[in-house]
Length: 156
Image (cartoon, rainbow, N blue to C red; front, side, top):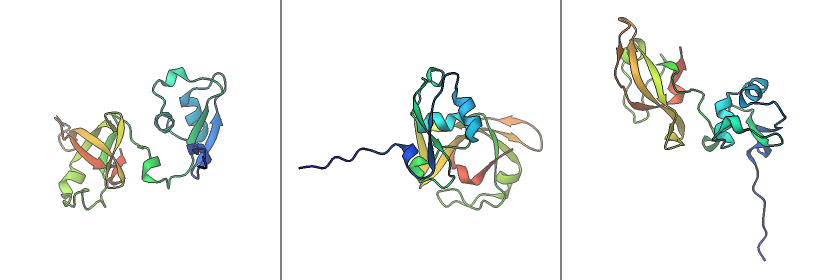
C-alpha cells in the first residue's frame, strides 16, 4: 500500500510565511506589509491576474533572502536601470567583464521571464539587459540583449 504525503505549500517551508487575503487587500498592499515586491508574490503564487485576488486565498510570502534557486524570484523588474557592480569580475560563461562595461554604461532591464518562466544561468536568477545608456554622453544605444546573472547587477 502506497503512503500519500500531501505536498507542502511554499508558505509551510523555511523562508516563507502564510498570509490569508482579506477583503480590500491587493498584492501591492500585502507586499508593502511584508516588505516584498508585489511581483515576487505574484510569481511565487502563480497569480496571472493580480487584480483578481480573492479574499480567503492563502498566499506564500517570502521572508528569507537565502532561498533555494527554485524558490528565488527576481529583485529587478522590467524597466529598472542597473549597472554592473564594480567588483564583478566575470560573466556567467567565464568571460572577464571589461572595466568600461561597468563604468561607462547604465543598462535597462528588458525581461525577467522567458516564455513565462524564470531564467537561470547556472543556479543564479538572471535578467535580460536591453538598451544601454552611455554615462558620458547620455546617448541611449540600441539592444545589448544579453542575459546576465542578477547578482552582479545593482539598481541605480
